[in-house]
Image (tube, rainbow, N blue to C red):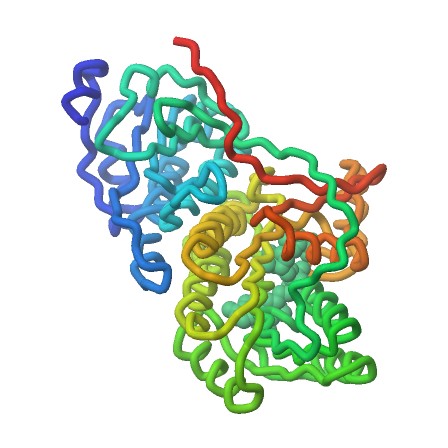
Length: 426
Ligand SMILES: NC(=O)c1ccc[n+]([C@@H]2O[C@H](COP(=O)([O-])OP(=O)(O)OC[C@H]3O[C@@H](n4cnc5c(N)ncnc54)[C@H](OP(=O)(O)O)[C@@H]3O)[C@@H](O)[C@H]2O)c1
């Protein structure tokens, strides 16, 4: 590959940087070079790992964290005021459709590069996902236009694709995947959307709900439990950090002893730590990412032997919007989407992703200030009844991933269609 690149770009150089170099070390190396016009970065080639394998978590170091460090180094050297082009290449980190195998390890890169494109709109960013690093469409690759939204080009069977959202319409259905008396574990259940979901399944299906959250049970959580106990079976609360596999195992064993078989899992955890990339410290980036990456892998590991009817991943519209200031969260969400898609192929139960739009009355961004800001952009607040209806439809329907957003004029359910075929003109 390198020889091929060299033929087209004789001045190209391979940088002697390493994934565990610090920002200071990279700055030292970059500062000795002529100004960089274009950065080509290729994600390491990886075999599709088992989804319960910690190598997915560890793989972040050589992927998204490595790229984050390169970005921070360039910013430290003043590249924010220069023009620079990027070509970032991953392999099978995006799925075209629900039967497409995906290796989620480096899917987080797509979120990071998307927010980078939003934060540095004068940088020309091209993100490409190849089927195999062995067969490069070399001629076309370097003529693909950059994408101002930082969305990837996906290359499969000699065709280029880009993702688009497609409206869907569901008829009211009688079927449900929820069980009367079902046992459901909600990671992040004591949070806003977790509580709404719990109320719905407790009221309608007398579900036995167990919440997992990091903090010790406090008066606020107890008040939520008491309120739901007046509706149906009292939810339980276990204090455990789900990014820590041992803690999640401990919680699992406690649940098994008390409840027996588990019928459904919801990943509703988030740690919102917004900052622009220029102001984002590595630890902050990692904290936002970990709650999506590590918790997803740990769910697969810990609950793999349960007779589950479903695993429900709460993700965000931000997987597509890739908003500036949210690189850690967006990287986590693009990972979560890819991880769930592969899990759906491998597990016998339903594995579904809901990419929520904005919730204005509950949850982590339910402040008046946020509501006002979203309203000014034409974004309305998702409310519990419509959201629960959408989840029922998602769980029994043919699609594995839906986005649900509410505009001030109408609400929209959209299918996430990655298969839009595009032609690249040379
Ligand atoms: N709210 C929205 O508008 C919106 C929009 C799009 C997507 N979403 C998605 O919807 C889900 C729920 O969001 P929300 O607004 O309900 O958030 P929330 O109110 O902040 O609730 C999140 C919960 O996650 C728990 N948590 C965080 N880290 C954890 C960990 N390591 N282990 C166990 N629990 C952990 C938190 O409790 P502790 O701090 O005690 O751990 C908290 O109760 C998230 O997945 C989010 O990405 C929300």
